Image (tube, rainbow, N blue to C red):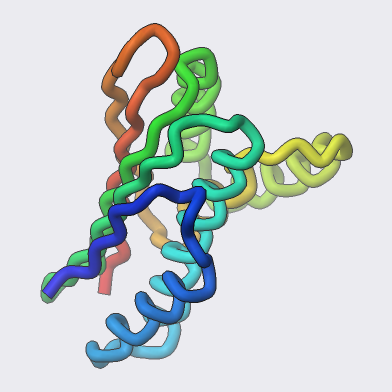
Length: 159
């Protein structure tokens, strides 16, 4: 059985969604580290989407599917982003995917040093997701119109 979140993010109670996910995930017997990583990835995903939505006032529709196989916990996340933000996000995802763990740690420090303005973005969250899943963040971009693109992230946390 899969866990599906398909809702308008502006009307979401973050705690209720997380508790529902936690209850669902606890039906499976995984080691504590894998469960903690799966909780982190889901919570960080919801947080990034909510924060990005609040910061940019974009269409708040969000879709998250979490499925479990014998080999992995798989996350599919769909969200709309401003078309103008797409090239920066794609470049950042490529940088994260092509970085070693040491380079990712340096990137976190750079993000902390250079984000003194308090601008909300997915920078450190995406890096932490990449570290937790110990795998690339796969993505596709679909143009919706001149203003919005749909981004789909595919994450695989190996068991």
